[in-house]
Image (cartoon, rainbow, N blue to C red):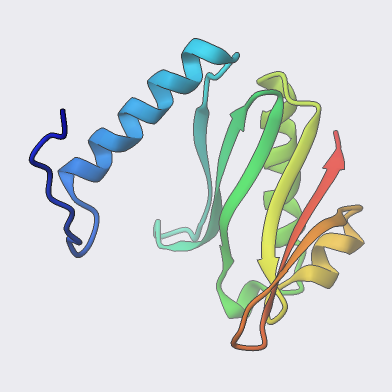
Length: 138
């Protein structure tokens, strides 16, 4: 028997989206060694102002880098490398044997490749931009 259901679109991140995510994670945990461990790498100045950093997550033996940012005045000074190395080290500590990330064509692909990452996939957007998926062994 068909239920009386509705489908609608809500703006933004809703409590229901968080519930959907919770259900998906529960499903994943029943079928795999799903155990996401999240952490943040931060660069702060002497007054405690945030100057850069990144999000990290280890799951299924892979460390994932997300949302890496460095203030413009710190670019090219080695801090980006330090952030990636910190995520790799924490990933190894948490049992990861690979590290992955994604970047757009207007972002930092050459930087990541200089650190030993290789492109394993590309998504070309209708707008003319491309998104690259990169990884390397730890």
